[in-house]
Length: 443
Image (cartoon, rainbow, N blue to C red; front, side, top):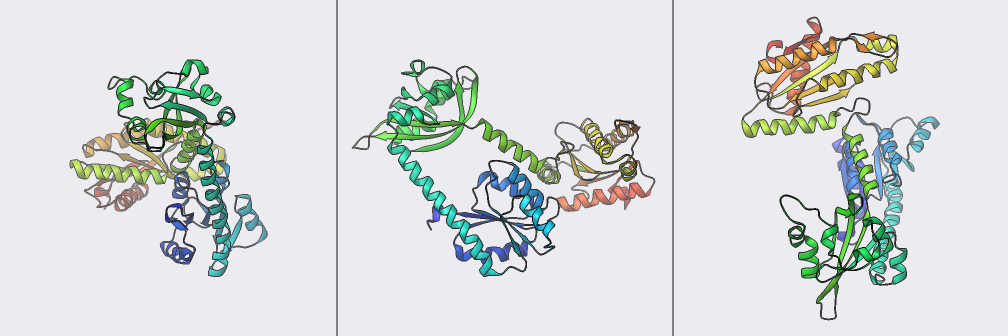
């Protein structure tokens, strides 16, 4: 198997020892094995790589295997990736059926039998290798036939021919449609008019002279693949994926280029949607646990760089379970959404509010100036949350217990900092609820 064209396998398991073991078991297949330890990371990974098969652990904290598979299966960009569930638990009919409904094609029971694992995975690797080989043949045929008039008229991509100066010499019907004009409008116009828009920093021509198309393709005969904006003359800029190849004569002198492009607006929207599902809470729209930890680490890094402070607030709603039990989950969801909205209104744009799960929320205050400033924010949160919340058929008040910790004063890393805030929150809850405590005062 060609090293630069290896098929890829994604292994998802929250236990490092399982990832290591699977890596060793799969090594004889010669595939490129990617390993992640959560469903959220798996969703991000499938956006940037095409996998022949995914080996997905069912039981994981946070997003389990069934939920991860369902999200992948619901997105047409990732729906066709084969998923094999790896599980050591219940094998009854309903459990197995749930896996297949989530999008799985097979199950592998633990402990793993190497021969069975390799036999099942090998089938999907062979199919993927055939797909890659077919793609390669298709690309070669497409370039060989680029001047064929029938191909130009029927191609679903926009195809533009350029002379060595960058002027348009031909354009196919799809290219005219995507760029918003008739063929006669485009012929002999410079391609830069449809690649760039005028900015205060640079003219269209300056951007053209600095571009990869001008320097690498028309200048040195290279082939390029890139994603960037193109300009529709009627509707403005849109995201496009482009392949650009130089046309060389028998002496390898550049005579022009062919630009093949497609509108990827829908694909970008799908990617954005999948990224949002991976990093944001679906009920409240707040950052989820994954994004919370990323933001917290970035804030702590800035604190180290500029000798500043990062404050973390850990919030738990008081008596939320009672409201949920009395009024039902719909009312509980309305309350959580209301709390999320009010929390967002209490912080600056540079800060972050996250829902960590259930009725637990966290706030990261970036560059916290002083304990008094943080105290002011905490009191503001208590005040706004205590105002009645509209739950549809009724209104309810809710309190909150808040724990506060500072970096670097109370912890040396992110996990310690969250733990310190959590401990302070429990002290606040034990001391009467609907209040806040600093970690230094709670010890």
